[in-house]
Length: 64
Length: 261
Length: 247
Image (cartoon, rainbow over all chains, first blue to last red; front, side):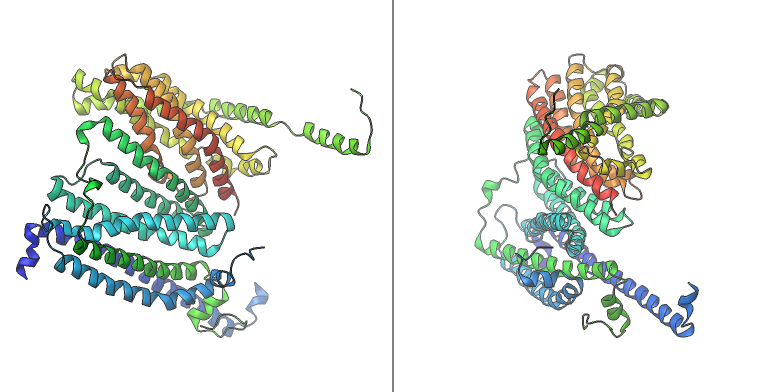
């Protein structure tokens, strides 16, 4: 196992390359998920605000 | 719109709510197969494949470097085709697809550059050389960054998407020109010619080839899975005022015969 | 001229009247050129800014690299080429911006003259007012960097071919970025991939001239690319302007 990790002396090139590959792709996978969560939270908040406004002042549309 | 020459399912899929649900259903399967094939490919590449008789174990970077390089070009082509559709037919979905391609392509191109650098150091003794392929790859990264930057510089996302699509199309004409001009330039400055990347030595052993191809399959599937996820988010953002998004997010009952979620 | 009134003659006459009412494409281009020159002349102080920039950067190089005449002579050609490309950048950004803001571009789109032709005219005016002065002072800048005299004509010819090419390519990018909020560094980022082949061939001609080798091939390539760009770039520029104007 240690022999395998040593990669014939090239461990300091091979493993960072694989690390970069997985870190960059993990970023690519999780960044949109975060964006999506933020977006849905904003949309949900907007909808909730609209709903409370509608129930509190059903005739608010007249004034606008 | 007389687009009757297209099959019906394309029209169905072109509608954002339909695509949203279709992508959501397909995405986990794509990612699952991508992960499984990545595990198989990496096991084959890192464990089963023997060391190279010239490069020792350093060549094992090939199993991520070459698939990433292929993906960089493949994603650019996908982006350009989607951009062309967006420009000519103004399909909203094509705009979103083209623009969501760009960050994934930039990620793969960055991986290609960094892993190539890490491979070049022990093999050629240098992190970087102005070879035609390396320079083209760097230019490809700049093309991606230009598309992303232009798209984000617009307040109106649809207009930004069309402008960036046109830039992507200009880039696809430019890329071969860059490649061949750098080749010409390298023959002019004979000192820095690199022939380590000699394509004549491309006779690769089958034990090394199959993990490479499996990894290529894994990266393609990963790209589609990632793209579908990004397009879903992009559609939510672009259509945030629409009824189907409100129903989806707020759990509000849909009065129209819209999309059941 | 005797006109015979026939049933079709009426429509021909209206057509003729309509054609005389609309200025020809050439006349429109001439008017646009004149307008751009007048505008440039009214702000002639700004025309000196790229020149000043080029002189300052050129003067900094010997301080950074040391005054060794042989070293300067070796790098002078390529350095001046890069300086000219960089000096072109700030002006490129504003090629269409003012016209977009005051609504002139919408008139361009509505005009009966082809939009691509108007865009080409704008590029010509832009090149004549902002880039040509840079080429005119090249002998002076060359002297500052100890550029060999035999290279100077090749450098000037290379610049005369490369800078219009860059201005044409830059016009497309400028039109694309015109509708965006900010575009300073963005334009440089977008121009870099397009500028790489142009710089390579221009520098190739200069390097060949410096080494007493035949330098006509890269210049011919540049000329061919320029002709291609004169035809294609205005069309792409027109498409980009349509995207920038319509909402």
